[in-house]
Length: 127
Image (tube, rainbow, N blue to C red; front, side, top):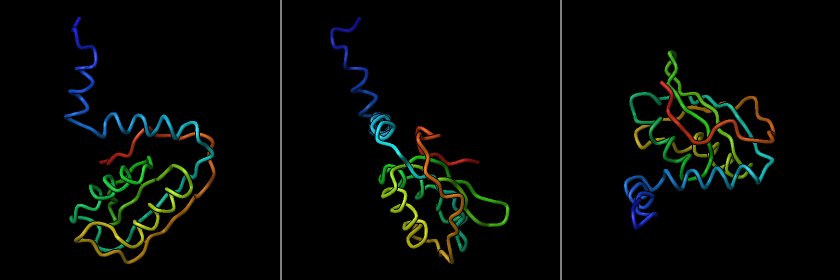
């Protein structure tokens, strides 16, 4: 056994600081309920412009969980879950900001509901 038991965790944190932060964030959120869940679809120039990558980064900054993916019809779709104010921040970003090269024509939000626990532990890009 290493004389420095926290050395391994420090090495992981140095390589990927979001990994440990994300776990703590979800653990903190999981006791804070209730949460909001909403499905979304973004229309416009949202494929081939790193929209999914920027969405994942923004979701992690805001502190929400869920997923994002391209569709066969040229849109981006996904789901966001978390505290209501954070979900609302993500909805605003999806409606107005997006990636630097994107053009958002509109964003549709459906199936918005209150949930008692999160269905995801992080935010990911689906393929």
